Image (cartoon, rainbow, N blue to C red; front, side, top):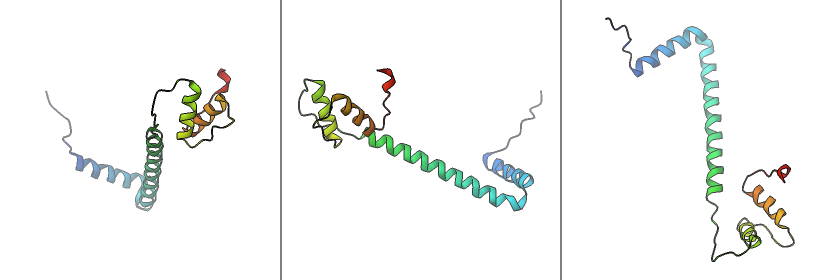
Length: 112
């Protein structure tokens, strides 16, 4: 049996791809295509970093709990205060909605 596989290494593939791109796009369109590819990679990296920062911000929210909390209202007030929300004259539902908005979650009132 004969083995007809190509023994091409990584750097050789780069040369082959570059030659194929020159043949397909031509020498005049290649810089423009490379610029667009670079811009697309840059936008992807920006979006990826933004999502990572948002996840990091939500996960770094530390709640300072000094003792056990008896009621759900106490829990809501403690979380709201840690997020900088004024809890005076707000109902439990209002606090839940505000906390959800602050933490970046969408509330769905259609399930209630």
